[in-house]
Amino acid sequence: MTGDVTEDDVVVRVEHLVKRYGPAVVVDDVSFTVRRGRTTALVGESGAGKSTIGAILTGLQDATSGTVEVCGEDRGRVARSARLRRHRARQLQIVPQDPFTSLDPAQQVGSSLREAVAVHHNGGKRHCAGRAVELLRSVGLAERHLAVTPRLLSGGQRQRVAIARALAAEPDVLVLDEAVSALDVSVQAQVINLLSALQRDTGTAYLFITHDLGVVRQIADDVIVLKNGRVVEHGDAAQVLDDPQEAYTRLLLASTPRPGWHPVRR
Image (cartoon, rainbow, N blue to C red; front, side, top):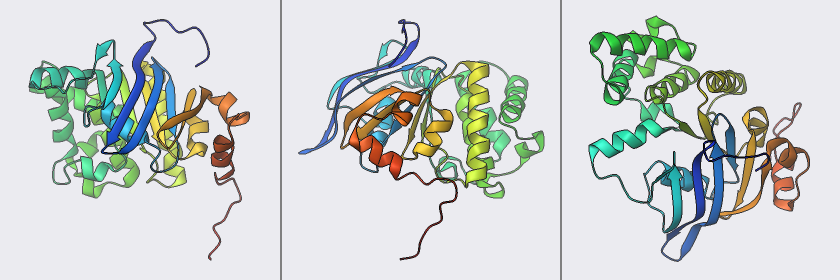
């Protein structure tokens, strides 16, 4: 990546990461860093290895080889104790693609947020309740939404709740795995603006996993392009998107719908 990077800037460091499923190599010698207060986009087609890398970072999967550090700590071993899992969760949280599957559809939003605050921070019921209201307001929702369940919210509102719940841990890093791909364009823009504002306020680093280079242009500072599990191009977002050096990156850009594009029935 461009610019002078100090050790304090780097909150995620991945070096020579490999993930195999039997003979299939899904992630092949991938290295990159994510810097505090910046958004690094991990892009590529389906099957490029993006979500596998995210799953390894969050501890949902183990790497075959290579090293993963979050906030200077090795993530190579699975967290066996509840204490270590909570510690890691305060460093890194994930916002998945579909909040309806990650949120309990029968649990009220306020209960979900209060529960998340209680898990990560010491404090009584009053503190948890007050923090839940703050989190909800920080993502542009009203206090009245505390009393509703996710099934009564729109897709954009559910994603805002998922972001609020992830922020309850006050993490250093958010992994956003296709976090806006299921939303329509106008709601995408609202969520992206929200994420940008939250990052300015908190300094949280984002690893933004997506196949949509149109979204990348709106949010990313740095871009890593993956093909078949390998990094084929990386650098400053403007440099990669405006002057791509690799044919695969140019192909991805050419495949991105532009204003005025309409699908053609075949």
